[in-house]
Image (cartoon, rainbow, N blue to C red):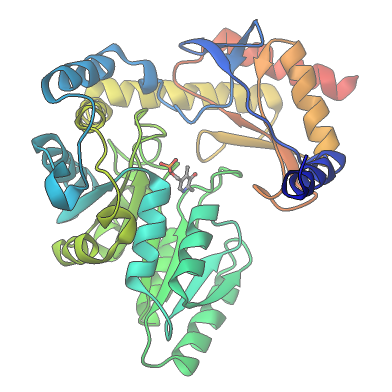
Length: 388
Ligand SMILES: *Cc1c(COP(=O)(O)O)cnc(C)c1O
C-alpha cells in the first residue's frame, strides 16, 4: 500500500475508534415499510418517505410512462436542451402549490441550496444561519464567501443581535437569514412568524429550507410557510422532491425575478445535466396526489401514527414526522440501534457530524404507511431496551 492509501486508512481507523466510522448498508428488497438488510426483514423507521409515496403505484407508472416516451436521460443541462415539457409543467405546479410566482427545479435539494445561496450573496454580504442548519446550507454559505454568523438553535434574541450587527458593519451588503422550517434531526419547528417579523424589521431576506415540512405541514405541498400564511413574505423557499414527495430533486420557489436570476447565476443549475424527464413526471404525479383528498387522508393517517407513537412513548406529540431519541454517546446510539435491529426494526443511529457531539441519537421517522401494530411494537421494543 502506498502512502496515500495508508494515510486514508489511518483516518478511517481513527473514525472507527471514535465510533464515527460509517459504511453502506445494501437494502436487498423493499416493500412498503419492510426492508431487507443482510438477509433480515425489518420494519423501516428510518426513511423520509413520510406519506409512503415512494412506492405509490401511480407515481411509479408516471415515471415508467415518461421514460418510455422521453427516454431515460435528459441529454443536457437545462439551459441547453434539457428542459422538457415535464420540467416546465412541474415548475408551474410547484409554484402554484407553494403560492409563488415561479419555481426552479434542481437535480437535488443539495444542489438547490449550494447553487442558490452563492448566487444571492458573496463578499460584502452577511448570512445568518441557525446552528442546526443542514450541511448543504452551510456549504452554500461557505462557497459564497459571505460573512457567516451563527445563532443558537431558534434563539431569536441572538438572531436579532446578528441582524443589527450586519446592518452596522455591512450597510451596503445584503443580509440573508438561512434556516429550516422543520429541523431534519430534531423534528422541531422554527419560530417562523417571529423570524419573518425580525427579517422585515431589519431589512434582511429569508431563505427557508422546507425539506421536511412539505407534505407534512400545511395543506398539500404548502409546507410551514403556507400553513402560517407567510409564503408571500419569504423571499426564497427551498424544498426537496425526495422526502415526503417520494421521488428525487430539489427546488426553489419565489418571485419570477428571483427564478430568472437563478437561471442565470446558480452554478449547480447551469452546469449540471437536467433531471431525467421521468423524474419530473413522477414528481408531478406525486405533487398531484399530495394535493388531492388522498394526500389529505395520508396526512391524517400520519398524524394518527404520530399520536399513537407519542402516547405509547409517553412523549409530547411531535411537530413533524421526526422523533429523535437522544442518547448522547456514539457507542450508546450504535448499540441501541443494533438492539432494535435485533428486535426487527430499522432505526439508524445518527452521529457527529450530522448532529452535535454528545447528542448522538436514534432518529425515528414515522410514515403514513406504517401500521398501528408496527408502531406499538417499536415503542415496546424501545421501552424494553430502556429497562434492560
Ligand atoms: C435532505 C435535506 C436536504 C437535501 O435535499 P436532497 O434532495 O436530499 O438533496 C436539504 N435540506 C435539508 C434540511 C434536508 O434534510
